[in-house]
Length: 261
Ligand code: GLP
Image (cartoon, rainbow, N blue to C red; front, side, top):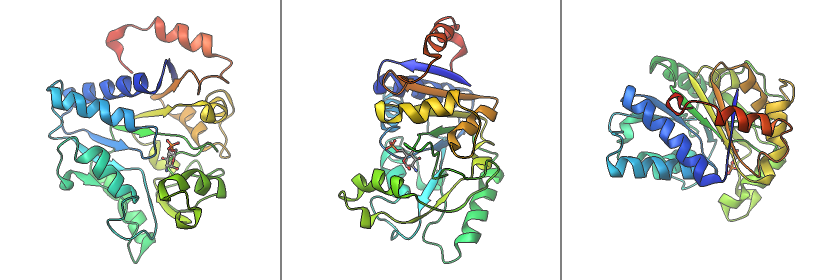
């Protein structure tokens, strides 16, 4: 995988937004897999700015969700559907018809999981999948020891993830659902390009294990090592535990600018 160390979160957002813009220039109806959480917000802001300035036309872009809480009422402001509509679909001026996600309110959740996995494939597959990383190394909501071959399915959140995400629910862990639907690791690995952004010291250990540790289900993000086009963008703080940081810096500095991510 390629590791790119950037000075700060804004620089990471700009770099990834430019990669998305380049994708949309060569494939205007690209399927953009988006992630939630605080980390990707600078990406969405930078991409929306490019659209507003006319640097890229995103009008034919399609957007898909990575994961969703189970049981939040439809329209709940912290459901990932609402978050993606607010942070991505609306700022890019897209219609809700160009957006798909798993249905966390379905009566038959198992069928909803299978249907979502199928609809991603029927849509031609994800062109670029953005990922954040949990402090425990999860991607999407694939908690430690998720099968590396897993498909979209229901997962139970760890206590750590519920604690981490309580800040989106007035700091009240009781409001954080226990269950979620997430694209499986096997599903995520089918995207054509995986781009993981991690910022802040709190992610440094998970990043080091992802990049320099063995491929292991206990660190779900380490599955990126199996992908032929995976990019890990980290700020200085999140890179602080990477032993190979000097090598990653030198490699990226020597890369021709036209290559992009
Ligand atoms: C949630 C999401 C992940 C995200 C993670 C980290 O668990 N399901 O997709 O990567 O949070 O979020 P943050 O970027 O806010 O640290």
